[in-house]
Length: 256
Image 1: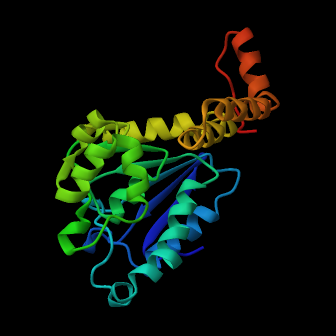
Image 2: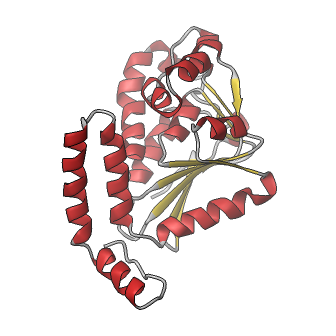
C-alpha cells in the first residue's frame, strides 16, 4: 500500500505508523484519517506491536482547521472519518504505543490517548483545545479522559483548555511515562520490542478486560476474567511460558 500523509513500515514484529504532515504539525485531514484507518486494518499476524508517532516537532495538532468541508459538516466528519479511525486504534490486533514526540492537541491528544500505552517526550504537552474555538472535546475525549484522570481533572482540562505537560500527565495517570529527549527513542524502541516479543494474545485479553471493567459489576468481571484466562491457558504462549519457567530460561513467545 502507498500512503501520502503517513508512513507505515514494519520490521521485526513492530509496525511504525508516523503521521507525516510536519509542515502543519501533523494536523488531521480527511486523507490522513483514511490512511491511518487503512494502515491499522492492514496489520497481519506478523505485527505484534504498533508504534504511532509524528514526524517533525509535533505528534498531532488535531483537526486541520483549513479543511472547509470538515468544518461545514463536523457531525458527519466525526461519524464518517473519526469514528472508524479511533475504532481502528482501539480494536487493533496488536498492542499500540503512542510515542508522543511533541504537542498533542485536540483530536490529536485524544488519538494518542486511545492507544494502549502512551510514552511522551518530557517536552511534549497535551491540550483539549476545543473550547478555544467554541467546540466540545470529541474524538473520544469525553469518554477517555474521565476514565484516566477523573471528572475534576478532565473537566478542568476541557473547560480551561490548559496545556498539560508530559510529566504532569504522567503524574496524573493520564499517560504511562514521560521520558527525557535523549532517552525517548531508545525507551520507545525497548518497550515496543518487549511487547513484540511477548504473549500477544494475553496482551489483547488484558486490554479487553480492563476496558470492560468500567461497565461491569464485580461478578461479571470475574466471569470475564475466567473466560479470558481460559483462552490464555489454552495458548501455545502459556505452555511456552510454563516450560521456560521450569527450565529456568527466557520464554520464546510466538504470539499464539
